[in-house]
Image (cartoon, rainbow, N blue to C red; front, side):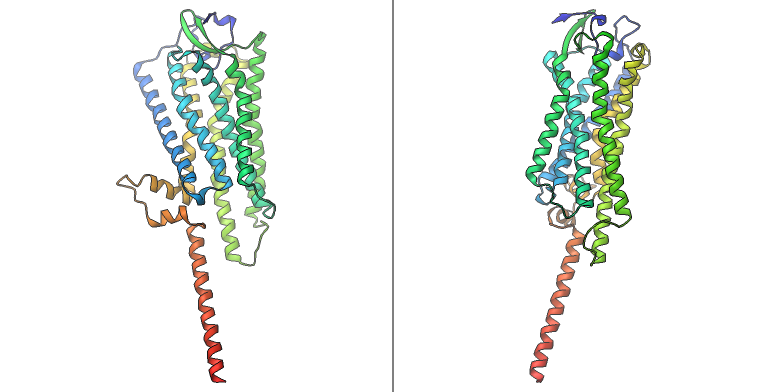
Amino acid sequence: MKTASSSDINNSSLDGPFLDDGNQTAFSQPGWQIALWAITYLSTVIASVVGNSIVIWIILSHRRMRTVTNYFIVNLALSDLLMAALNTVFNFIYACHNVWYFGEGFCRFLNFVPITAMFVSIYSMTAVAFERYMAIIYPFKRKLSAGNTKVIIGAIWLVAFGLAFPQFFYAKIIIDNGTTKCVIAWPDDAGQKHKMTYHVTVIVLTYLIPLMVMFVTYSVIGTTLWNNSVPGDQTNKVYYQHQILAKKKFVRTMVAVVITFAICWFPYHLYFLLNCFWKDIYEQKYIQQVYLAVFFLAMSSTMYNPIIYCCLNQRFRSGFRIAFQWCPCIQATPRDRLNLTSPLPLHKLQREQLSNFQTSAETNVTNNDKVYNYCGS
């Protein structure tokens, strides 16, 4: 284990915020304040792990939910679950104490996880946007197969691993004035150029570019849907309008997911950009509370998606009712189970049954007419 002063090394995002006037001592805060932060963070972790686990269960346990779009949603839920379970708790402990208790191996791993999970999350959303764009704007083109979907998901993870690898490779444990810290030691980084370049690259690749792509994609989709100009069979006006309505609901759901992600992560990225240009930001007395608030907002993004799905999507709402049916105040109905198992949504199934009944009735009337005509002749 190497001993070094902070002037010899570029501190990572984990240990930077808590330097006190150059004395390298952690800012202290009252016990009640730490307890409040701990309860807040723990509630977020529990909500995220439970919610995203249920989303994964709903999709993978019900064959009719295993669509291309939903596979990307599973990927998104998995990355959010990993972020909440592995990154949030340990970074919170480090942020409060400014002492690393978990060894060098976990130091490397924990610097690797956030970038990976963040990249997978945002590009899973981008994949959903692109898949919906192709399905709505070009409905007659060949759709993504299950095999191609798995290849895209695998590629997203591989690129995420590559982007996060520098964090893993350069992470190390140092002893700074008797305090164990987990830092990113960029080599020969005069003026923190490597650090700034990496942070800017991460922000561009995991925030700006995908958000711009999704903004354009959903703008085109929204314009097409709300102008009722979607290509397709319009001979059955009722069925066509119902398809448009269902697609609008899904687009609203995913736009809500994207906007939530953008809002939650913007202060986090801004925080580290300011550090690249404002060198004394980590020496301010208030910075520990700022970091805890900014970090909480970013981590809370992992718990909102299941809530959005439950509020805006009928099938996910049915799945959550089934998952929580053990609760006395929640009751799952046969309709909820039918929503997850029927090949069509329930309203479509009922319409098909009505159509079949009408067809059968018309056939019987026709046959009776034929018999009557035959006997009458």
